[in-house]
Amino acid sequence: MKSEVRVFSPGTVSNVACGFDILGFPLESIGDEMIVRKTTEKGIKIKNFSDYKLPLDISKNAASVSALALIDSLNPDFGFEIEIIKKIKPGSGIGSSGASASGCVFAINKLMGDPFTIADLIKFAMKDMENDGMFEHPDNIAPALLGGFVLVKSLSPLEIIKIPTPDDLYCTVIHPHIEIKTAYSRSILPKDVSLVNATKQIANFGSLIHSLHVSDYDLIKTSLNDHLIEKHRSKLIPNFYEVKSAALEAGALGCSISGSGPSIFALSQGIDRSMEVEQAMNKVYSGTSIEFSTHVSKIGDQGVKLI
Image (cartoon, rainbow, N blue to C red; front, side, top):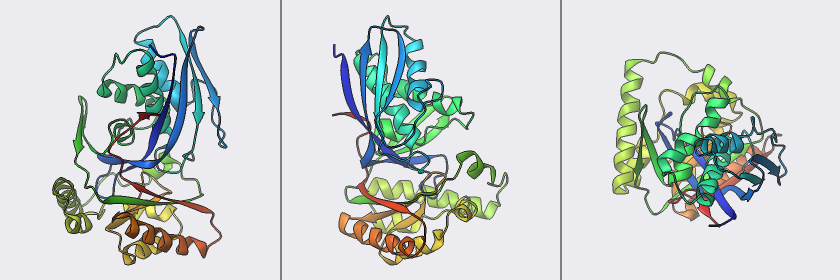
């Protein structure tokens, strides 16, 4: 049995316009790396090998909180050291903490001989969100571990459905370097919505799921519209509608907020179109004083993996 593994854990886009708290997908080329090794001393130790300040307190780090949930269920007579090479900026809206939690439980499961299923690992990785007092939801964690589009059907019992991913679907992400607290972004959402808007949202979500199954890019384009969440959270993201308009004019199939923001994602058919969308999004923020970064990635069909 191995004493050390290195894994890649992908960033994720959740909500996906009309799929609030239900739908997510991983980014094939954007993610964190983690090295996890066994130690003779029981417990968990965290080492940070990145430019971002991460909590080393094991009760506050996404990776270690999830890891503790896993090892407490087996009580091994050894411990683990976790080296985090974080490449997803915390608070970016593309699943930074989810990548840490998912990568860690995947790696430890490998070192222990794969005693747990992916469904088990999703539950362990969700412990970090529970620890933060946030709404416990796997729309980042499940796609990070399973790969591909993932639909969260139920939390209790946990039911996750993997959706087919069209071969030529790419994602462009622009991340304005501002901070949006997830708790605040959730707090501004209305508790009640109109029946008209709810009906539109359900119709879009249903047609989006069908379009992914049959690789109908035209139907994807007409389905990626959010009638419930975007209008509230967009107020927290400077120049959001200018970026969205520029992306659509450049040929994106759709554009919306990634997670609770501040990142904005756009889906496109083909890498060339996705890069054109990136240029259009860049142009908007280049005219402001806001620092930003962009990514172009294929939708990852594989989740966390050994490297």
